[in-house]
Image 1: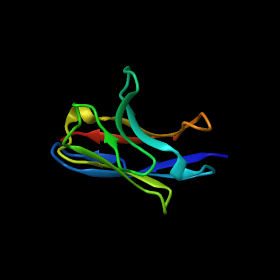
Image 2: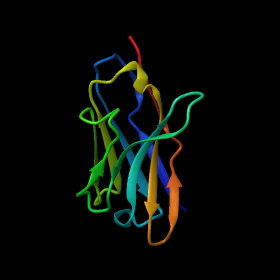
Image 3: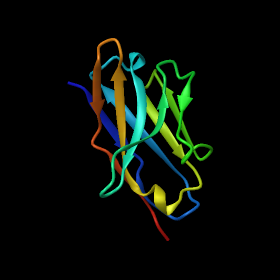
Length: 118
């Protein structure tokens, strides 16, 4: 059974930083492209960052580029999202996603809440 467990969310002031972690089990982590998404109330779930299996390629949309950094440790089955210069509009529930293109499987975690407020 695949499990993705996110942690590291919380309440932070504008301009602050957080590091989210997502630890995976029940899958071949190194075969999965890993991503972070976020969803604010009443809005769609949007991609925040993506990292390829070996960690040599990442992608982030312009809304977070330069502020958010995705990384992974395949030895620990864990993907991270470092978030700097947080803004109130970054407030959302953040979800971890794993996709194995060869096995054609996709999995989601339960999410971790990030609230940016003074």
